[in-house]
Length: 110
Image (tube, rainbow, N blue to C red; front, side):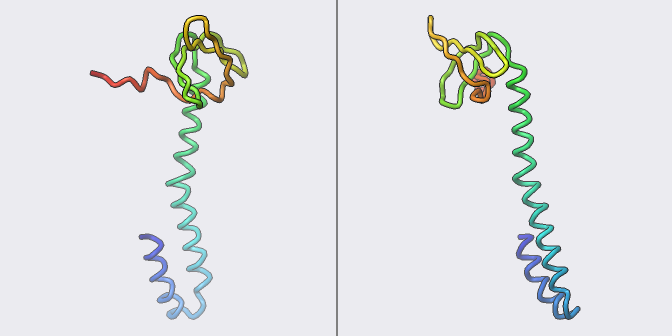
């Protein structure tokens, strides 16, 4: 919608000023960059910060899901990896960056 508005305003401004095409082009490019920042870049940065905070606040006993879809409970936390318990006597060592969410937040409330 903004792009269409700027596109229709650009020819009218160019005819009236006789050379303002570069200014309208720069204004249009700036508007596109601002819209992309607000709709794509900023929300992604916020999501990454929340995920990093979640991974840093993990503690023993937390129920988590890995990128591969493995559900488990945190048993041990090191700098680069986490040991999760998947089943009785089954422990997996996974990279800390592969933990994506907490299962407790996904459980629907009844």
